[in-house]
Image (tube, rainbow, N blue to C red):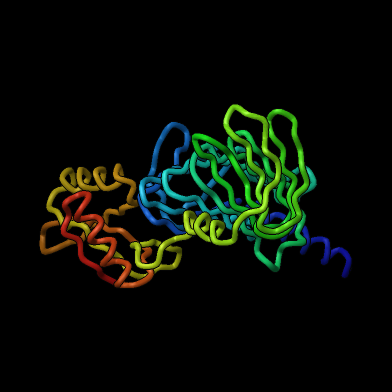
Length: 286
């Protein structure tokens, strides 16, 4: 009986794991979008991702994605990442194939889960990295593609067939555009710090995060159509707005809000950005 109960419990855990989203948006420094089935939506904390979703970031943007295996993927400004595959493999451990078509990225594994089994690869234009519980940074530029190993071990391969093992921290694999790869080179620590800053969310930049309690009231409008027009303008600019109807006497007013801000200070920064970009006089609220 005990063995049967254990088997049932494990089966239940497997079902729960398979039902969990394979990736979610953790934090957004807007503007940023998710493209799915030909439709673009502004990126919001808590948004679930699936295979074939494409993430795009705009000028000054950063995005953090949290994978179900505990890893974090960070995407810098003017970037584009395609989730070619997200989901369990045939052997039921985590599997992912990510394609960075533009910009800079960082892949970091949760320290407590580094030994977890996974089948993950990240392609940076002409270079593909096989992940084994590690911390890497990479970028595709007009003149080259490269991947820098910060910690752990990876296998890198180039589209022309070149393949290398990397296990020395602060080394990077360089592939000049339309030329043979230069191979593995040592990276200057100060240069690596500058690279890493390209994918890190900036303090006081008006960032939205999962669990943020503050909101930004963008507008309060009479009339559903007028409210939808403002909502569409905000969403088109890469900000994940929401509409909240409020009854005032016998009338209904529609509030357009940005949610998930961690503090009043972050909300005030975002208010200034929205005013400069969209001309809206926004104010923070709980």
